Structure formats: structure tokens, C-alpha cells
Amino acid sequence: METPELIRRKRDGLVLTRAEIFDFVERYTRGEIPDYQTSALLMAIYFRGMDRRETADLTEAMLRSGRVLDFSALPQAKVDKHSTGGVGDKTSLIIAPAAAACGVLVPMISGRGLGHTGGTLDKLEAIPGFSPRLSYQEFHRVLEVCGLALGAATEEFAPADRKLYALRDVTATVESIPLITGSIMSKKLAEGIDGLVLDVKTGTGAFMQKLENARALATSLVNTGTAHGKRVHALITDMSQPLGNAVGNALEVIESVETLKGRGPRDLVELCRELTAHMLVLGKVTDSLDDARARYDSAIASGAAMERLARVVAEQGGNSRALEDYSLLPQAQFEDSIVAPEDGYIAGLEARVMGVASMILGAGRERSDATIDPAVGLVFEKKVGDAVCAGERVCVLYSNDRSRVPVALDMIRKAIAISPDPVSPPPLVLERILHAEGAVTMAE
Image (tube, rainbow, N blue to C red):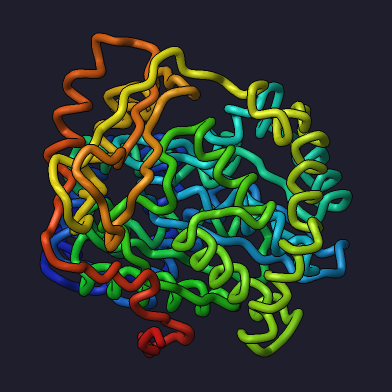
């Protein structure tokens, strides 16, 4: 079909066939369809949407545009986790080694942070010498030796998504659930996985700030993964305040290691335990979430999960001694404290503002080609629900460029809310979507 007719059909709300979708993705990836026509089709999809079958077909077409990894020679179940992004979200560094220690293989391909949200690769690269850029053969070897591998997507990995996302980013078509689904799932399915746990964030610091939008995205992701024969669970989780206490790459590595050593903050431990449990169920290690949670606890208590992280860091060229001696990680020169102006209870730590403040310090990037400073960031000593006295420290700001500090300090102060009355911390896991068709199980 000629491209103008394809655009016209979607503009008018008609359903595209599998052949039409595959033909479009193939021709655009080869450079045979110009950006202006592709932009028109993306905008038509943005307004008209796609049904479940169209979304599954789009995902597969993007998936097939590049290489699909094959780990079928390894007998264990292959299960990964994906987060839609948040502030202080370092769960991958904890649950990948924990799940591997419990018996599943975790072939994790991660990305970099952009805007106020952090990226797993940026955190890993704060470890001296660590390299996520592995050939397929190297990735396979590390996965076999360690039970997990932590890599970066190469250019042969879903190239259609790379081209389409760059265009979506400059045509105001990013916020489309079918297009988001295709982007996420094409890359995850290309990992050669059997199962996938999705952490779909909602709240002020999340991409999907409204719960109903997060639910729609989670349902679309689960439906699409199921349509491709994969076992998929989605958890919708709170991102109204930063996750854990640390925001910033080296700081988050330290907090991840402390969590693997059994000393993590309550909310981070809770979420990592839950995500890992779902990974173990999808990997058929056990059919009971309660048993899976107990296995996570055992892997932490025994040191087995920490040992897996140290092993994979060493196998990928990193200095594993930095996981014991934090002085080997990047260090910030300056430290500033933000204290409570009055007695009360922490009622809010605006996640998006905290993420932007951290980015201003240099911990994140506004453009994909920007350089980040792995040493800088924030550490919260109080979280929502905690009692606080006037003059007591709420947040510590770590920096290397003093000129960036005043703006960040002002933003953070304004983003801290204190109530005179006790405040209950928000529930962390809001909903679980464990089946196709959009079936929702409310969190306990």
C-alpha cells in the first residue's frame, strides 16, 4: 500500500493489517519512507490509537527489524524486569543478582537516563572499569557464568525503535500507549526471554503520572507480551517520592550494595523483594509468591545475591573492590544540608522536582549527548511519614560545581512539604496486572 493511503486509513480510524504494519516498519527502517510521512502516521496513531492486534504486530515488526538473541541452549528460564522510569529507581542492580541467585537467568539489556529519570547503565558505569558494551558472545558467556548479564543495546538491536523514537521525541508523539508498548516490548522481547516483570510507575515523578494511564499502559504491555507467548506480570508502583534514599549514580550504587547486604531502606527493600518474587514465579522456580519472597530473603541473608553482583561486575571489567570500599567510587567535593524549618512530619518529597534538581547538579542529562557526573546527587535522611524536628537534616546535596547548587537547593526546599499532623507513607505497590485482557488484582 502507498504510504499516503496508509496514513489516510489510520487518520480515519481504520485498523491496519499485519502486512501493512510490517511493510511500513521495514521500509522506514531501510530509509524508503521519509520522516515527514512517518511523522504523519505517528500522529494519526497518537490520536486514533491501535487495537491489541495492531499493537502486537507493531511490536513484532520492530522486534524483527534487528537481531533477536537466542539463549535456548541454556536450560534455565530467562526472565527480565523493566521499569518505566523514576527517581532513585535502582532496583535493577538489586533484583538482577537476587533473581540469579535464586535460579533464573537474567539477560538484562538496559538504557541510559534522560531528563529527570535515571538510567541503569549510568549507575553501572559509575563502577570503575565496568563495561556494559558486550558482543553477543561475551553477553552469552557472562550470562552462563554469572546467571545474569548487564548489557547495553547495540545498533543491531531493534533499529526500527531507535529511528521511530528519535522521530517521536521531536514530533510530540511520545505519549502514545501503542507506540510506548512497541518501543518497550520490541527491545525486551529481543533479549530472548521467557518472562518479564514490568514496574510501571505512577505519580509526580513518573512518565505516567495518572493511575488510569499507568493502568492502561501496564495492561497493553502485558497483553502484548502474552500475545508473543511470554509470561508477563506488571506491578503499578508509586513514584510520588524518590525510591529509597539516594538519587545519583554512584550514590545509588552504594545504596544498592547496602540493600544486597541487608541494610537497604524500607521502601526499596519492599519493592525489590516483590519484583524478584514475581520474576521467580514467572521463571517457574516456585508457583507461590510467598515462597518466592522467602527465597529472596534467603539470597540476601546468605550473601548469595551480593556475590552475584560482585561476580558480574568483575566479569564485565569492573573493579569489584569498589563494592566493598566505596572510596573507589566517584566522590563529590562538596556537601550541603537541607534542614527542616519546623517540627512536624514529612508530608511530601516531590519526586519530579527532586529528579530535576539532581539533573541540574549533573547527575542526569537533558540531551542524550550530555555528559553526566557520576559522583553528584541527593541523599534523603527523611522520607514521607517520618517525624522531623526543626533544624534536623532532611536531605544532603552532593556536588562538584558550586554554581549549580543554589538553584538545586531552592528547588529541593520548595519540594519538601511538612505537616503538623502524622502522615502515612503512600502504598508502594498500587495494583498488579497478572493476566492478559487487562485483569487487575488490587495490591494487598
